[in-house]
Amino acid sequence: MEPSAGQVSPRNESPRILVVDDHEWNVLLLERLLELEGHEVRAANSLAAAERAVAEEQPAMIVLDMNLPDGSGLELSRKLKAHPRTASIPIVACTAGVMPSDERDALEAGCDAYVSKPIDLRRFAEVVESMLSGSVSPTRR
Image (tube, rainbow, N blue to C red; front, side):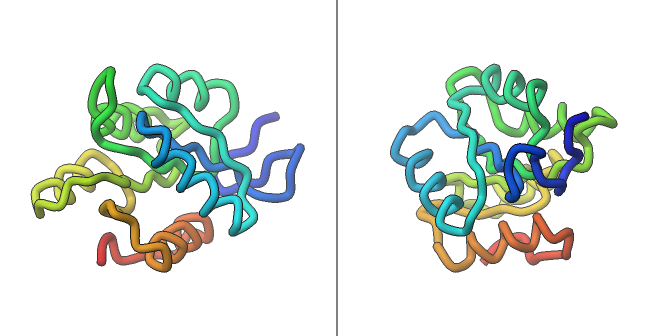
């Protein structure tokens, strides 16, 4: 039986977080930040890889870049939020977009929070904790 959003993986005591970003340095940074907080991390570098990862084992949360080589993270967010099996997975948009319309577009596509790059480490940790605990968080700072 696979865990639902927010549940722990049966193989591990911490929730698995899927990081979707095509830039290796961004993935490494996010992996290290999340692992330091005690989370298990899986990475995907494209929409297709992210969809496969979600199908294999539903993550407790997704950190999603908006600009990927095979499409927009907005597309994946809409798709996941439209499916009953994945609709409850918290999605954090993590992108270099800094225009107010970027944040609005991400939230309208179903992302639950928005963190801009460069990443404010303290803010990112707060957003992750808020999303995993199910508490409401401001979308951006």
